[in-house]
Image (spheres, rainbow, N blue to C red):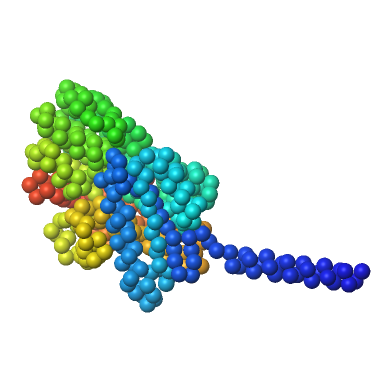
Length: 416
């Protein structure tokens, strides 16, 4: 009997040792001693393909980090190389779901970083949270990616949220054009509706100045019906809340119809020198000149930032690692800028990274990203998951063909 008990005790001890050893050696998906595997989905084709440079800009920054030696004299993040995998979803939520499953189940990513699009990311937010895989710094300002942090703790945005941005436009219009009629042309999804809600909130009692709201689809071949309705409404101000492709069509149609409103408001996700260059080619300087938007990143095309250290780094690394890309297309710069914060989060996970550590770091961001306008801080807290909330009004100059800053920083914290 004693012998049997002794054998049983020995067996249990061996089993316990095996279990402890297995747990101690358990590997976090996407993390080894030599690498972090992260990824994302982006519209490399389809109606939102203007955003295709973003993951390339991210890759350029990650390559820079992988090849330079940091303060610890190691390459990469604490000696781990960043493996960046990204796939084309064509801005189609069904494709986003398929490609995200591939990233999670086949590529075993540590997290997705910067994956793009409101509806595409809505399609996978529950999947990512059910799987407990971080869906970090999504490339959409849809308010739900921050406002619902309690029920979706694995998801976080990055850029200023759309309701807050829309509210800034509403307050600006109320202050500067209190008697002017406003027509709103918006993408008919949660992305565009967030902007419309914010605009109404910002206008307050003057929301009756909105005389028509005209929705359009991201893939619509024409926006002529919407522009005609805006003109017929007598609106002196037109707000365009759309992705680049329909935005270009709106400007082109206004030119074709000889409709020149006194003011144009353009949402930030299309307020890009490259996009405006394409709009200019299909319209004219008079139609675009004076359009206002908001900005939070340095305009790497603005001569006043030519000697800025981060802008110089961006241009040098683009020339080195993406020599065939046009660095004047600031969607590359957006990706390069976002990758800076991705690296900061990976660094914050320490010597033994886990997803829990990544989430904790994401809820305690507090630094300056050198890509942003002077004075902007990247900050979050357990109850405030909006990393970037400060912006400036920017205005498009049809002669110089760049966006320039106007006035001081505006705090648009959290569009809940």
